[in-house]
Image (cartoon, rainbow, N blue to C red; front, side):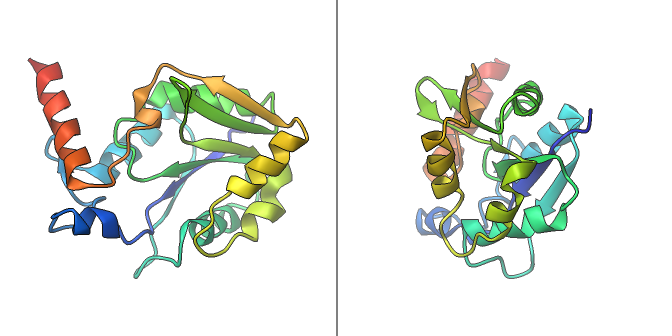
Length: 184
């Protein structure tokens, strides 16, 4: 059984993070001594799933453009897990569970405590729609249309890492504090 590709989105400018008082890009900021993006990459590697990093020089014009770049770069994939690079607490087992669910459903949306999370997973049938995305809008409209047709499986997971992203310096500091308390 061929596995879907995890598309790690790392092309944003991180403006909210910088505006919150940070002095570096959020994906390069350190969490427990390791850059945020490396936490994500390490989780994906540990999952055993194939992956592709979208981080062109200068970034992209938005989430949609980043998704399209990643999907177009992996045109033979049987599906994709679209994973923002600012979710450093995502668990490898979660990625595997979403990938497994994608073998049974055309589109999978993870949830943690009633909150929509990431990565959202798309089967091959969504290649054209994903590859055509552009600008700021991500795949929300694709998910909405698929839900209308009954093609979306909601997957309820016990992984807060699916919803805990780093948007501000406060987010990063809270994750660091929680990490310190967990190690005690």
